[in-house]
Image (cartoon, rainbow, N blue to C red; front, side, top):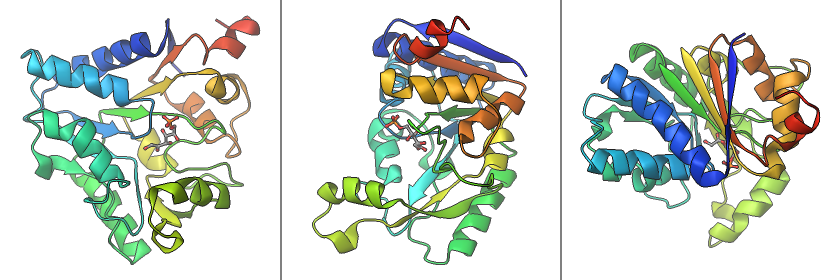
Amino acid sequence: MTMTIYEARDYQDMSKKAANIIAAQIIMKPDAVLGLATGSTPVGAYENLVEGYKKGDLDFSKVTSVNLDEYKGLSGDNDQSYRYFMNTNLFDHVNINKERTFVPNGLEEDSQKACSAYNEIIESVGGIDLQLLGIGGNGHIGFNEPDEVFHAGTHCVDLTESTIQANARFFASMDEVPKQAYTMGIQNIMGAKKILLVASGEGKAKALYDSIYGPITPKVPASVLQLHNDVVIVADEAALSLIKEKGEC
Ligand code: F6R
């Protein structure tokens, strides 16, 4: 295992450091395949990448991207979809070829079809060079929630009742709230050559500690990263607080 932990002062610093690593990947390999994540944590890193592009330091024209996950039943036009998130936070602001940006097809009703098509896409682009990950407060990565087993490939997950309830406020009616999502599995994620995990805030401190120093278990999905040979973690002081308290870094 090679796991490097970079401590950032705060969210801004974390975002800059994470963006620098992604930028370095694009500069080293202009046709890199980036595995991308949504959620609040990477937003600042995407802002820094857009800035780098606007300054003329970054060229996305040959980059391919594959996203971790998407809600089943949502179209890319829906402002709650992860496709919409990626367009508005990154793709619309850089010179990436949108046809080379992949997100699981939320409108495919046949889960098996949607998942095998996505596995094939990941394979056909030659695998992932750099996978960006956030982490859930419970240690989830992508939509791989704590479970009894690790799920290998792209699969369909039932969202928990609390996630459905939390999302309800963004939709006109309960019927429209997604109940399922498609997500890359552990094999897809672990197949990436390099993994960059970003974490910010105290809410992530326990998950981060357990993922790095706890046993490898599907009950803490991110703990599987201990088996990867090239993981970089960029986390702010609050997210690293428990690790520091226990004297691990
Ligand atoms: C996003 C994703 C999720 C998030 C995680 C953290 O595509 O797959 O695993 O990375 O839920 O979310 P935030 O960054 O909002 O705390």
